[in-house]
Image (tube, rainbow, N blue to C red):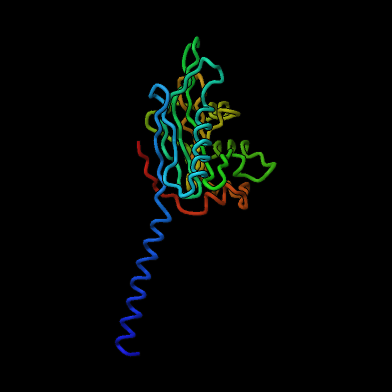
Length: 237
Protein backbone atom coordinates (compact mmCIF):
# COMPACT_ATOMS: atom_id res chain seq x y z
CA UNK A 1 0.00 0.00 0.00
CA UNK A 2 1.47 3.40 -0.99
CA UNK A 3 1.81 6.34 1.39
CA UNK A 4 -1.15 8.21 -0.11
CA UNK A 5 -3.55 5.34 0.51
CA UNK A 6 -2.23 4.86 4.07
CA UNK A 7 -2.93 8.52 4.89
CA UNK A 8 -6.41 8.28 3.34
CA UNK A 9 -7.33 5.23 5.47
CA UNK A 10 -5.99 6.93 8.59
CA UNK A 11 -8.08 10.04 7.95
CA UNK A 12 -11.23 7.94 7.40
CA UNK A 13 -10.76 6.16 10.74
CA UNK A 14 -9.95 9.40 12.54
CA UNK A 15 -12.96 11.39 11.38
CA UNK A 16 -15.27 8.38 11.47
CA UNK A 17 -14.34 7.76 15.11
CA UNK A 18 -14.85 11.39 16.06
CA UNK A 19 -18.28 11.38 14.42
CA UNK A 20 -19.29 8.24 16.30
CA UNK A 21 -18.23 9.75 19.60
CA UNK A 22 -20.20 12.91 18.87
CA UNK A 23 -23.34 10.96 17.93
CA UNK A 24 -23.11 8.77 21.03
CA UNK A 25 -22.72 11.80 23.27
CA UNK A 26 -25.75 13.50 21.73
CA UNK A 27 -27.90 10.36 22.04
CA UNK A 28 -27.22 9.71 25.72
CA UNK A 29 -27.52 12.84 27.88
CA UNK A 30 -26.82 12.43 31.57
CA UNK A 31 -29.85 11.53 33.69
CA UNK A 32 -30.40 13.87 36.63
CA UNK A 33 -32.76 14.14 39.57
CA UNK A 34 -34.45 17.48 40.16
CA UNK A 35 -35.70 18.53 43.61
CA UNK A 36 -39.10 20.01 42.84
CA UNK A 37 -40.35 22.30 45.61
CA UNK A 38 -44.13 22.24 45.98
CA UNK A 39 -46.87 23.55 48.23
CA UNK A 40 -45.67 25.85 50.98
CA UNK A 41 -42.04 25.10 50.17
CA UNK A 42 -41.60 22.38 52.80
CA UNK A 43 -42.09 19.45 50.44
CA UNK A 44 -39.57 18.34 47.80
CA UNK A 45 -40.41 15.76 45.13
CA UNK A 46 -37.90 13.78 43.03
CA UNK A 47 -38.30 14.38 39.30
CA UNK A 48 -36.20 13.01 36.44
CA UNK A 49 -34.50 15.15 33.81
CA UNK A 50 -32.38 14.17 30.82
CA UNK A 51 -34.21 11.13 29.41
CA UNK A 52 -34.25 11.08 25.61
CA UNK A 53 -37.89 9.93 25.60
CA UNK A 54 -39.97 12.84 26.99
CA UNK A 55 -43.15 10.76 27.19
CA UNK A 56 -41.48 8.07 29.31
CA UNK A 57 -39.86 10.75 31.46
CA UNK A 58 -43.25 12.37 32.10
CA UNK A 59 -44.79 8.99 33.01
CA UNK A 60 -41.96 8.13 35.42
CA UNK A 61 -42.18 11.57 37.03
CA UNK A 62 -45.93 11.19 37.56
CA UNK A 63 -45.27 7.80 39.19
CA UNK A 64 -42.63 9.29 41.52
CA UNK A 65 -44.85 12.24 42.42
CA UNK A 66 -47.84 10.00 43.20
CA UNK A 67 -45.69 7.63 45.27
CA UNK A 68 -44.47 10.46 47.52
CA UNK A 69 -47.88 12.13 47.83
CA UNK A 70 -49.36 8.76 48.86
CA UNK A 71 -47.36 9.07 52.12
CA UNK A 72 -49.69 11.85 53.22
CA UNK A 73 -52.36 10.92 55.77
CA UNK A 74 -55.63 10.09 53.99
CA UNK A 75 -57.63 12.79 55.77
CA UNK A 76 -58.36 15.89 53.61
CA UNK A 77 -57.15 17.99 56.56
CA UNK A 78 -53.61 16.56 56.21
CA UNK A 79 -50.45 18.23 54.93
CA UNK A 80 -47.17 16.61 53.86
CA UNK A 81 -43.64 17.92 54.18
CA UNK A 82 -40.25 16.32 53.68
CA UNK A 83 -37.24 15.80 51.45
CA UNK A 84 -35.40 12.89 49.82
CA UNK A 85 -32.01 11.44 49.00
CA UNK A 86 -31.05 8.95 46.31
CA UNK A 87 -30.35 5.61 48.01
CA UNK A 88 -29.60 3.56 44.88
CA UNK A 89 -29.06 4.16 41.17
CA UNK A 90 -27.52 1.95 38.50
CA UNK A 91 -29.22 3.15 35.32
CA UNK A 92 -31.87 0.42 35.59
CA UNK A 93 -33.24 0.92 39.10
CA UNK A 94 -33.68 4.12 41.11
CA UNK A 95 -34.02 4.09 44.89
CA UNK A 96 -35.45 7.17 46.65
CA UNK A 97 -35.32 7.58 50.44
CA UNK A 98 -38.04 9.99 51.53
CA UNK A 99 -38.18 11.38 55.07
CA UNK A 100 -40.74 13.80 56.42
CA UNK A 101 -43.99 14.32 58.30
CA UNK A 102 -47.70 14.27 57.62
CA UNK A 103 -49.85 16.34 59.94
CA UNK A 104 -53.61 16.07 60.27
CA UNK A 105 -55.37 19.05 61.80
CA UNK A 106 -56.67 18.25 65.28
CA UNK A 107 -54.17 15.46 66.08
CA UNK A 108 -51.62 15.67 68.87
CA UNK A 109 -48.50 15.18 66.73
CA UNK A 110 -47.46 14.66 63.11
CA UNK A 111 -47.05 11.25 61.54
CA UNK A 112 -43.39 10.40 60.90
CA UNK A 113 -42.49 9.13 57.44
CA UNK A 114 -39.28 7.31 56.51
CA UNK A 115 -39.79 5.20 53.39
CA UNK A 116 -38.04 3.89 50.33
CA UNK A 117 -39.33 4.03 46.76
CA UNK A 118 -37.68 1.65 44.27
CA UNK A 119 -38.53 2.45 40.65
CA UNK A 120 -37.90 0.40 37.51
CA UNK A 121 -36.66 3.06 35.08
CA UNK A 122 -37.84 1.07 32.05
CA UNK A 123 -41.35 -0.01 33.00
CA UNK A 124 -42.20 2.47 35.77
CA UNK A 125 -42.99 -0.32 38.24
CA UNK A 126 -42.52 0.48 41.91
CA UNK A 127 -41.32 -2.59 43.74
CA UNK A 128 -42.46 -4.05 47.03
CA UNK A 129 -40.08 -6.10 49.16
CA UNK A 130 -42.00 -9.26 48.22
CA UNK A 131 -40.88 -8.75 44.60
CA UNK A 132 -37.35 -9.71 45.64
CA UNK A 133 -38.40 -13.18 46.78
CA UNK A 134 -39.82 -16.38 45.37
CA UNK A 135 -43.63 -16.59 45.40
CA UNK A 136 -45.26 -18.05 48.51
CA UNK A 137 -42.10 -17.48 50.57
CA UNK A 138 -42.58 -16.21 54.12
CA UNK A 139 -39.68 -13.84 53.66
CA UNK A 140 -40.75 -11.50 56.49
CA UNK A 141 -40.60 -14.27 59.10
CA UNK A 142 -37.29 -15.50 57.70
CA UNK A 143 -35.81 -11.99 57.86
CA UNK A 144 -36.93 -11.53 61.47
CA UNK A 145 -35.34 -14.88 62.38
CA UNK A 146 -32.08 -13.99 60.62
CA UNK A 147 -31.97 -10.66 62.42
CA UNK A 148 -32.58 -12.44 65.73
CA UNK A 149 -29.67 -14.83 65.13
CA UNK A 150 -27.34 -12.07 63.87
CA UNK A 151 -28.33 -9.15 66.10
CA UNK A 152 -24.89 -7.64 66.48
CA UNK A 153 -23.59 -8.41 62.99
CA UNK A 154 -26.64 -6.98 61.21
CA UNK A 155 -27.61 -4.17 63.53
CA UNK A 156 -27.30 -0.61 62.22
CA UNK A 157 -26.48 2.44 64.29
CA UNK A 158 -27.28 5.55 62.31
CA UNK A 159 -26.35 8.99 63.59
CA UNK A 160 -29.36 10.96 64.75
CA UNK A 161 -31.63 7.95 65.25
CA UNK A 162 -32.70 6.34 68.49
CA UNK A 163 -30.09 3.76 69.51
CA UNK A 164 -31.73 2.10 72.50
CA UNK A 165 -34.30 -0.12 70.80
CA UNK A 166 -34.35 -3.86 71.41
CA UNK A 167 -34.83 -6.64 68.88
CA UNK A 168 -38.27 -7.31 70.33
CA UNK A 169 -39.31 -3.77 69.43
CA UNK A 170 -38.16 -4.33 65.85
CA UNK A 171 -40.15 -7.57 65.62
CA UNK A 172 -43.25 -5.84 66.96
CA UNK A 173 -43.03 -2.78 64.71
CA UNK A 174 -41.61 -4.18 61.44
CA UNK A 175 -44.97 -5.33 60.17
CA UNK A 176 -47.57 -4.25 57.66
CA UNK A 177 -47.36 -0.61 56.60
CA UNK A 178 -44.43 -0.02 58.99
CA UNK A 179 -42.19 -2.71 57.44
CA UNK A 180 -39.86 -0.30 55.64
CA UNK A 181 -36.89 -1.34 53.50
CA UNK A 182 -34.09 0.19 51.43
CA UNK A 183 -32.16 -1.75 48.80
CA UNK A 184 -28.44 -1.38 48.23
CA UNK A 185 -26.01 -3.19 45.96
CA UNK A 186 -25.35 -6.10 48.32
CA UNK A 187 -27.87 -5.92 51.17
CA UNK A 188 -31.33 -4.79 52.21
CA UNK A 189 -31.92 -2.50 55.18
CA UNK A 190 -35.06 -3.45 57.11
CA UNK A 191 -36.32 -0.93 59.64
CA UNK A 192 -39.39 0.80 61.01
CA UNK A 193 -40.36 4.18 62.31
CA UNK A 194 -43.70 3.59 64.03
CA UNK A 195 -45.94 6.36 62.87
CA UNK A 196 -46.75 7.93 66.23
CA UNK A 197 -43.63 6.83 68.12
CA UNK A 198 -40.96 9.18 69.43
CA UNK A 199 -38.10 6.82 68.59
CA UNK A 200 -36.86 5.56 65.23
CA UNK A 201 -35.69 1.98 64.73
CA UNK A 202 -32.64 2.12 62.46
CA UNK A 203 -32.98 -1.62 61.90
CA UNK A 204 -30.74 -4.23 60.37
CA UNK A 205 -28.63 -4.63 57.25
CA UNK A 206 -29.29 -8.12 55.85
CA UNK A 207 -26.85 -9.31 53.14
CA UNK A 208 -28.42 -10.79 50.02
CA UNK A 209 -25.97 -13.68 50.41
CA UNK A 210 -27.88 -14.77 53.53
CA UNK A 211 -31.21 -14.57 51.67
CA UNK A 212 -30.08 -16.26 48.46
CA UNK A 213 -32.20 -19.40 48.84
CA UNK A 214 -35.35 -17.25 48.97
CA UNK A 215 -34.45 -14.64 46.34
CA UNK A 216 -36.22 -14.90 42.99
CA UNK A 217 -33.08 -14.70 40.88
CA UNK A 218 -35.07 -14.67 37.64
CA UNK A 219 -37.41 -11.96 38.94
CA UNK A 220 -37.45 -8.42 37.59
CA UNK A 221 -36.28 -6.75 40.80
CA UNK A 222 -33.24 -8.99 41.29
CA UNK A 223 -32.34 -8.67 37.60
CA UNK A 224 -32.48 -4.88 37.81
CA UNK A 225 -30.40 -4.83 41.00
CA UNK A 226 -27.71 -6.95 39.37
CA UNK A 227 -27.84 -5.38 35.90
CA UNK A 228 -25.17 -2.74 36.51
CA UNK A 229 -23.06 -1.48 39.43
CA UNK A 230 -24.46 1.23 41.68
CA UNK A 231 -23.23 4.65 40.56
CA UNK A 232 -23.68 8.31 41.51
CA UNK A 233 -26.36 10.52 40.03
CA UNK A 234 -26.53 14.29 40.33
CA UNK A 235 -29.39 15.96 42.20
CA UNK A 236 -30.11 19.61 41.40
CA UNK A 237 -32.57 22.25 42.48
